[in-house]
Image 1 (spheres, rainbow, N blue to C red):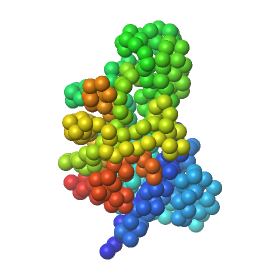
Image 2 (cartoon, rainbow, N blue to C red):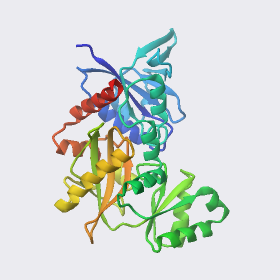
Image 3 (cartoon, rainbow, N blue to C red):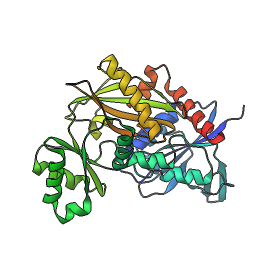
Image 4 (tube, rainbow, N blue to C red):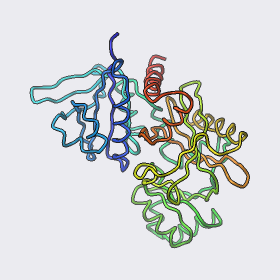
Length: 359
């Protein structure tokens, strides 16, 4: 059997670069090497592409791979005839054909439709949602418009803009207060993930400080109502007939599920299945598929919700089209709970990428 050439692309200019490296290392360690020839392709923080010609996955995990002397400048060509990677060696260029690309780039450049557009131009199959679904899912304000049209319950929000905040911060805070009515509220950059730039505001002063911090990452920021409930997540898998796992629940080790709680300290509790009623579980699984389809997602996504303590109500939070794939990440753990092992999950995702391409 001829092995497929699979390129695992990671890193990038996003603030989530380190998480991308950890996710990529997990995938590279677990992918079936009897079935696939793997080519790790790292993108530096300043946007330079490198083919890594070693199996030193520890250096990828710890984000020291750029110091590896077995890296070669390379670039993914948008030319359909090339259909792969152009490697620029001292002795000349080499073309490596790509049968499939697994983009493991969280955040800007990876989840926003950018690399997906490049792969569409090159006509190379790739894991995960397409250009439009990725772009719309990355921008939380656009996601909210689609979810509202779908009729799925979500948190009330105010969309703050950097220009207006810079012009009159007090007025922008006042408008958010008028729209939402009371504190606490959550402040989120529209196009960041992994809780980067997210804060909880309990009064005007902390709202103003939270907006100032969030605007460092994005020109649009959501101010959302506080939902008092379980933080739950659902893993959705598939193309035209997607399936949803049972929801998992997060018990953050900090006040909310911060960047550190997600990826650094590993002390947050993960409960699978979530501690919610049978009725709420059925609703959240159905709503996860509804959101996934409404946004046009393919391959995979993790859809996040709240389940309120008082009313057992399911409230949509956000969607992640390239969810974390680290050893402590919820997406692979949810699929494992459904009987799908990590290596088999990778295999299925590549299969869904090829199915979409062939179709």
